[in-house]
Image (cartoon, rainbow, N blue to C red; front, top):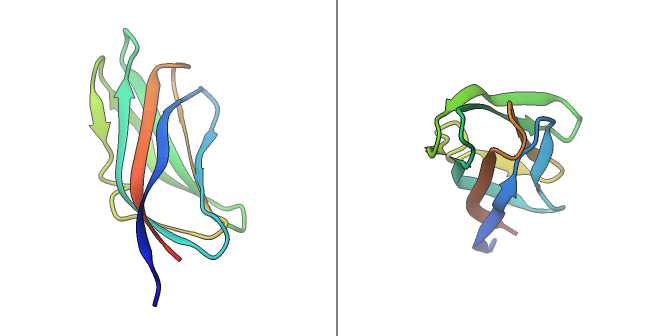
Length: 110
């Protein structure tokens, strides 16, 4: 029987203007994202883009230039209940470096 464990996938990762990996699913694991939160710590509004990179290198854009206001904590509905399989990754970037923090949590089945 598979065991399901709560897991913190990304805890306060500061985003850049180039895509950075927030989470890479380990071998033989299936992860379901429950919540993805992005907080704007800058003094200006910014744009957020989030991508899923498949194991074959293909990219799926999950969030495309989502505006995030000053001080806003944006919860992404596009990432809720998203399944990340072994070898897949979640990465993100923003229009202004060091403006957004990313927090992602979910469950891992082994």
